[in-house]
Amino acid sequence: MSFSSLDWTVLGGYLILVSALGIFLSRRSAASSKEYFLSNGALPLSLIVFSVLATTQSAATFLGGPDIGFRGNYTYLAGTVGSILASIIAAIVLLPKFYAAKVMTVYDLLNRAYGPVAMRAAGAMYLIGRVFANGARLFMAALAVSLIIFSDTNFTSVALAASAITVVALAFTLVGGLRSVVASDALQFAVYVFTALFILVGLYQLLNLPLSDLLDAARNAPGGQNKLVVFDFSLDLQDPFTMLSIMTGVTLLLLGNYGLDQDTTQRLLAAGSTRRAGKALILAALLSVPLTFVFISIGQLLHILYERPEVTGRAATSLELESTTVFMQYILTELPSGVRGLAVTGVIAAAVSTLNSGLNSMAAVAVSDFYRPFANTKSERHYVFAGQVMMAVFALTLLLMSCLCYYWQQSTDLPLLEFALAVMTFAYAGLLGVYATVVFTKRGSSWSIVASLLTGFITMCLGEASIGGALGVPESYTSLAFSWKLCLATLVSFLVAVLGNARAEDATSSEHSVA
Image (cartoon, rainbow, N blue to C red):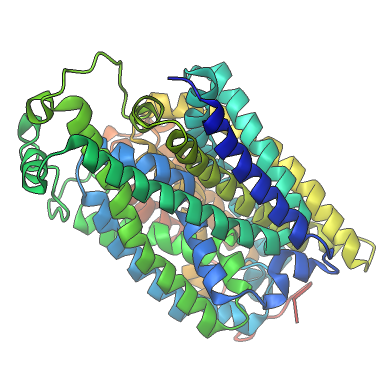
């Protein structure tokens, strides 16, 4: 079923609303880089909570959550235990150090401990990791938009869809800096949460079965699978969502995301105080629990709708369904006109929200940690303009990465959400090892920090079957779940970092800070 005029009207109305919000927030241009990138530390707590949620969930959860539910069970929901634990650790251990140092980016902390080379190495690793992670998320959103516009998911269609999303996100992000990004995050978060709830209720009504029958069908899925399992206490090292894996590798991953990834911490640094930042982060982690449940449940109901004719009484579907597109297939074929437009708007809202935050935070790191120390000017507006230029550069880079992810995801055959999480680990291993060194030891030097970051990244790369396998790395390592690879790579990175000489008690070098 194609998009109707009513669907296009709903989508167009959303784009007009977002554009109007951007124009309203850009009436007064940012006077300094601190205002542009951190909103002078004056963002309301509620906006920060919703922005953190939109940044950490977004397109990956909107499309990946139903994908997980359609393929498997609720064990991904147990991962929110790791999310809450990671948020508490970040709030207690990391955020106070960032606020005490009055940094604009979290990597400036390394400048104070080891000097500018270490800071820029960490900033570069973040930028590489963010290109990987946001490129994967852009790819996922482009899959959905490609189905809407072109009714297929071949490479050309997905690339064109990714280009359209990138242009929309860049146009909005350039206008008002973090202030407009956070406001749009809140709006877009509200849109896709409402959309998800609407779809979940609609699916339940469409199936028109007692809840007890649905639960029994999920509990007795084909192949002896129980799709209602939440906590998996097995020792399967290839499953990233066992409880042992969640309490170790998944928690490490989320700690990296919450406390060491400028994409998320930029919002927390704009809270004005450690207490407000920590409160916002923990609230966001708690709210992610029901949100994750909703999206996985959508996938569970889609499984019953399309693959359980003996339960629903519906004729077996003749569609060539794949879990990567089944959610969008439902939206485009089952939802009525108007509601279909609202659902697609939710997908695009999630995609734009992801890119908005990524482009702004990447530009903040590029300008603050790389460009500013060498620029021969004190004009703050010059740095704002430099940040806008960098956003355009990173937008093109993310677009190219999303095209690469088209083939990468196909080669791994991982569920979309697991693929997105695995991609994030490449940069986090080194950052986790380095920050464990600077926070918990007095060891490390400029050269050992750089070596540590590289070692963590290389260790993760060798875990890829396409890379490590070709170089003779044992399958016992390449076949591990991403969570266990992250644990090992973080440990290796930490051991390399502490090889450096013991550093002085007080930080020494700092080229810049934000008072």
